[in-house]
Length: 378
Image (tube, rainbow, N blue to C red; front, side, top):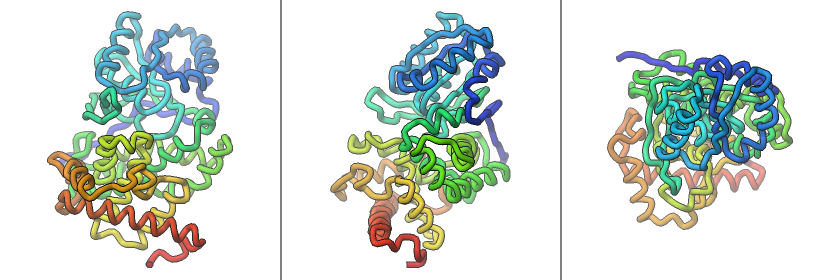
């Protein structure tokens, strides 16, 4: 079985690097499309436009319509072609990034990703996750190449709402457990092969970085400041997680997270928040998972504010019938849940989710009693 690992062409991270955006964007084009939503535009407009001007670049301003649909990607592609643009720059969150990648694929233009939040690992990947106008996931495409340049200004990221930062940790925390599961079964990743030693090492580094620095980094971002811990966790959320999932593989955590938007009650949740509960369920699904390994992860998620119960997802009174229907979707043919090296059924998925909810509630009660984390073998 061949091994494959893929990366973005260039990754730049640091406080204030947005001031250098013109120089980096100029490597791939002289007349870029700037695709951004209102919030991202307000956050970076002045610095980015000044940087583009200093580099002698003209730009085409294209507002993002808010949802990553194929129609939106086509609209952006048409705007780029009409304006004779030579690059597409996605600025903002994951849906902007994915739309920019989709539009670039339609036009064969090069891409630059400038995330203004560290809520997911979309900036580095060669993947677009498509949604319909209602926000439901309807599939994904894998493009020929990863983005040419990813530029992450940690000063901008640290000023965004802390919830986005925490959601990024939820998405990134699953990288190692999922890659490890997929690696054990020799499942083919989205990169087109089984994991290399390099990607497995990066996935593990992602996990270890979050567990060591995540709480400290969260506290700093809540105050809007950049610290060494913030720099480490941003790199884990964006780069390590991106390379890790794409070339390492996915499993139960993302299978559940990608299906949850089918329930309108979860639409308030960010992707990484759904992945966090998916990881809870994956750990309860895996018979080889030891409590000594699992409980510190659950306690970490609770400490940073990730959802670990049905109630925190908005699924109050999740009926057994609805749960069974949902589990059948998760366990359907072709699902990432089958990347485990043991048989997964709809019944086992449903049981694991119920167990995850019970575990989450138990650990939250322990936390409120002041006993959380004192003993991991209960």
